[in-house]
Length: 361
Image (cartoon, rainbow, N blue to C red; front, side, top):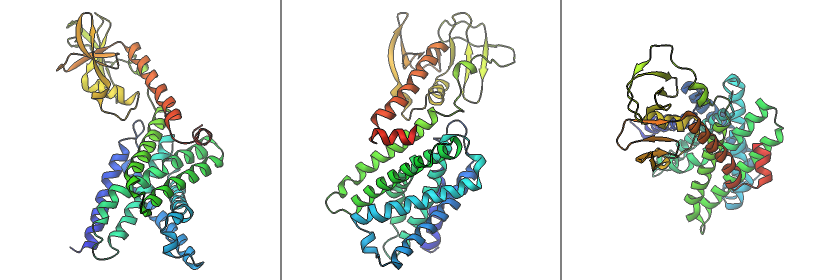
């Protein structure tokens, strides 16, 4: 098999793997893989064509590759052209799949797919540009692809707010110029002789920014369920005999099962309990944080006994399969975590306050 055809296969595989990864951040109302792949393929191809036409136009007016592929060209040409192309790709996808856009996270998810398509196609061309360039297919997938996705996250957020929540179009314009600036900085560092060493640090910063945007959009999602409501709807089945991990009662327990978790209520001690795995799901779905479950756990003493605690509101013994919690205490903790997420996003994002408010609020 020639490298040309192999690179097509590798590009498709890389794209599918990254789509699956992106889909993992769409917590509450997941987009179908088919819809995301369509955005990847159609939006990505459209954005590449638009970018190529714009670059061709620059050539017609006498601006050559040397001027474009420079530190100054990164800000004047590359950033604005490629971010405009991806925004146009998102507009095309929105026109094709408007009904799929029903929460703000969708704007971020779909422009991520468009950006992914743009980057994968771009990487394919780089890898087939000549002998010795084959490694660029994978190398750029690890560097340029996450960068392309990260640049555009706020644009997708702003696009949804404009189209579905009647926010002014200036919101999209502000997000676009910000994306173009972030993109320009990335390419300027890549072209720079003296500051190229900062490229990976900068990549880490913009990836963190994009994850914060997705996290923020998940917290604000209208599809985010409420724990107390789900714990007030027991299964319409006979109670199960389960041992409570706290009081050890084996009396029949009411079972609460839904798409997010399974839990039981012990009427003997008043605690709810579930498997540790389901506790992990509760703290992921109801307070989306992108960090390991182990980082949420610390030891506590409860009624003279040592337990491991999830943020001081759910408890389990080390090595135990089940943990227990008071529903109202977990609900209060989840609320604090979500409020903290919103507050930290506004305070720690490196964007100027006025610009952040214009885009986010």
